[in-house]
Amino acid sequence: MDSLTSFTAYFDTHIPQMLKKYGIPGVSMAIVHQGELVWSGAYGYADIKGQRQMTVNTICRVESISKSVTAWGVMRLVEQGLVDLDAPVQQYLGDWQLPDSAFNSEGVTVRRLLSASAGMPLGTIGEAVEYIPQSEMPSLPDFLTAEARLIQEPGTAFMYSYAGFNLLELLIEKVTGRDFSAYMEDEILIPLGMSQASFQWNTAIANSLPMGYDLHSETVQPYVYPARASGGLFANVEDITRLVSAEMRGKY
Image 1 (tube, helix red, strand yellow):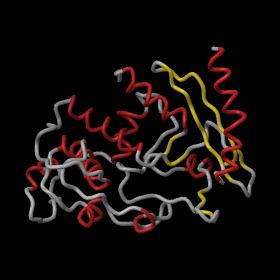
Image 2 (cartoon, helix red, strand yellow):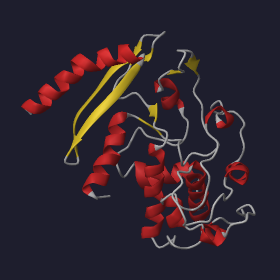
Image 3 (cartoon, rainbow, N blue to C red):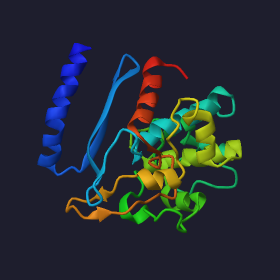
């Protein structure tokens, strides 16, 4: 306990200095030790103009941490015998078809999508796929038709891919007959105790989300993606520690 106290006292002194030095408005942090949350804290502001402080309850975009959570959702279906890791993903996608390419689409297996070795591209990121919450945007199938196009032979190399994980979102919806966010909440988020986390934009997120800022300190308005599996999770720092703890302990 003494070492934790001195460690976090160092945070209290130095984190505000680092925020000021690097122009970072605010941050929330946590320490997990041997699979247990032992400390959490927050520094700075969630909204500079409104002087809203960052707290451990502030819900943030967790971006690519979403992929790990999605992987839990897929593995839940594997445990239930509903998905075969080494089956071509196409057999789970209903009437949606992988776009034609020069490569063997039968090699796009669930396992390879999870391990980023399915031959899928990075996919579009940034302003090109950011939408105002609750505005009209492409459907998941239409978005995938433009994004999920093989660019190398499946199984030949690692390639970090948003598009590959977004294919797994469609898999989950087709296999379960449910909306992705609802399935993930019932099967993964709630069982792990991630009670404030969600893949679906809602009022709680709107009221909590920190204001974004670009490299010129200009504000960035809240946004959502047409696909959620690769980067669409919202959560506070303590909810993320529950995921980390579960993975460290190897328990569900």
